[in-house]
Amino acid sequence: MTRTLLVTGAAGFIGSNFCHDWLARHPGDRLIGYDALTYAGNRANLAALAGHTGFSFVHADIRDTARVSSLLREEGVDTIVHFAAESHVDRSITGPDAFIETNVVGTHSLLKAAREVWLAGSGKAHRFHHVSTDEVYGSLEPDAPAFTETLAYAPNSPYSASKAGSDYLVRAYHHTYGLEVSTSNCSNNYGPFHFPEKLIPLCITRLLAGEPLPIYGDGLNIRDWLYVTDHCRGIELVIEGGRPGESYNIGGNNEWANIDIVNLLCDLADEAFAADATLAARFPAAPPARGQASRSLITFVKDRAGHDRRYAIDARKIMGELGYLPAESFETGIRKTFAWYLANEGWWRAIQDGSYLQAQ
Image 1 (cartoon, rainbow, N blue to C red):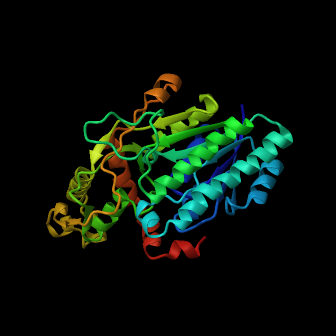
Image 2: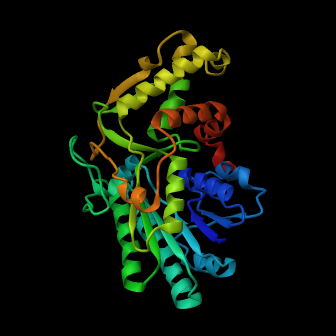
Image 3: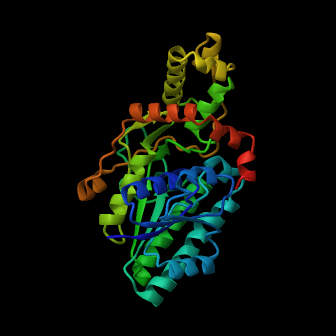
């Protein structure tokens, strides 16, 4: 079966990885990348797809319902994969309005367009897949069982509250209007194209620059980590075999405290510099370039407001129903990620100096 997909947030971290992965695995499909190119969207993430005959890109806002409706009709889209979101918790604390506009109003705009075209219009077979987060479930105690799909939502930040609102809208459009939807709630992703404001790429780039590695509070906040390609494969399984109206948790069965992740990144840096003498010339400010341990950069800072203590995903539903299993362990995935940032210095340097925005 061939599909025509509209992928929102296609120039972002997870969306761009999904585009690459989907077209590699489904070369006969057509994929339309759709992105407003806000600060976290980067055309460079999709550069390798520029010559792909099955890929096209639309620079537009998901709140433009008329534009989305036109695309669904004109391109014969049968599948929407909705990644577009404001997702940085710190930004949601200082500026929550953008999160409501994109995550709630934007999702509703897409749902309205899908209903208009697919239900009131063509009546064609379709799927609206909504990508959400484990943060909607709130915070777990250290010995509490992991989040399941039946757990009541308890969002603690403007970001997670806005994502919870969007999840409820997707559910409502299925139960009220009959729109064929599915939702996935994922744990923390990491991997190529991860925007450098997030923990893992932030620490990698600051370490290479010899800058302090800021750790909130005591560093013992725990997250379940999922390599981004494993997330993309989970979404693929839900689109192809997930039951309409259902939610599926996608996780890595891989809980790590923040301080342990940063320590591991520091050790990987020390190991890499010891094995490759050219790294010291490329990154002379990094501690191992000067014979020092990277862990010397770790700095504890005041905890952020509403910082959830622990997230953990119970992924037994998607494993049992759809045969999902992550391919990467954290140890293999984090090594791939560290190597990618070393090999793609130009990509993250352009974000740091802002030049990527001029290239949009």
